[in-house]
Length: 268
Ligand code: SAM
Image (cartoon, rainbow, N blue to C red; front, side, top):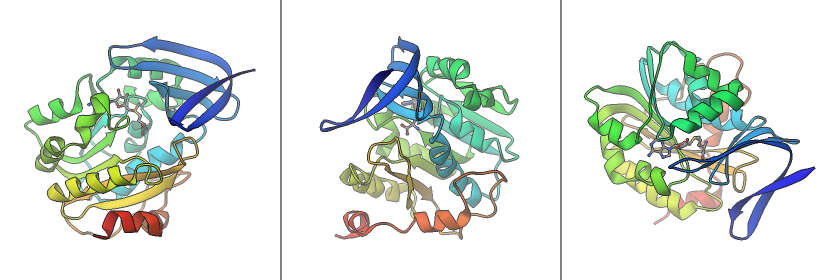
C-alpha cells in the first residue's frame, strides 16, 4: 500500500493510503491528479490540493448550491465559475433550470473528470449545459445578459482563481446577477482572509451571508461559504429530494457562527 500527502499548511499534512494513481498531468494551469484511495474513494487533486473526494464531496456541493437555489424564485439562468469536476453542476441540475453556463479555465479538468469521476461529471452531457473554457471574470465581464445566480466553485484565491475574490469581479457579478455564492476558505485557518473578503462582498451585495459546513478532507474540516444577496429575504424553500447533507433547517443552523469566527468577522 502506498501513501500520498496533501500539505494543508506548512506544519500540517493530510495523508491518504491509495490503491492506484489513476492519472497525473501538468496542464498550462495546474497539476491534475486522480487517486483511488482506500478511505475516501477517488480523489481529485489540483496542484496537490484536494478538490473533492468520492466520499465527502457531496457535503461541499450540496452546501454550495442548495442554500442559494432555495432563495431563488426564478431559477432559469445559472452560471458556475470553476466547478470543472461537475459536482456543483450535478446539484444545480436537480432544479428545473433552463440554462447552466459552466466557465472552467482548464479544459483538462473537465476531460479528466469525465473519465475518472463519472459519478459527478456525467452532468456535462445534460442538454441545458453550455461549457466555456476560459477565465470566469473575463467571460462574465463580456456577457450582455443577466443571470439569476452566479456560483463560484474555484480553487483557493491564488493564481488563476485570485481574480474571483476581487473587487473587479464582485462588481461585475453584482451588475450581472441577482444572487451570488462562493466557497470562501476555512475560517479556522484563514479567518482574516474571510474578514477582508466579506467587507468586499458587502460593497456590492448589501445583505451578505456567511455559513459553515464540515468537510473532513478540507484543511481543518471547518469550511465557509459567502452568499451575496441584494435583499434580506427569508430562508430557502424546500430543496429537491434525496439530498444527504443539506436541509433548510441545517442551513439556518450553519449561519450561527462560533464565537471566535463571529468576533473576528463582525467586531470592530
Ligand atoms: N471544490 C474545490 C475547492 O473548494 O477548492 C474547487 C473544485 S473545482 C475543480 C475548481 C476549479 O476552478 C478548477 O478546475 C480550476 O481550473 C478552476 N478555476 C480557477 N480559477 C478560475 C478562473 N479564474 N476562471 C474559471 N475557472 C477557474
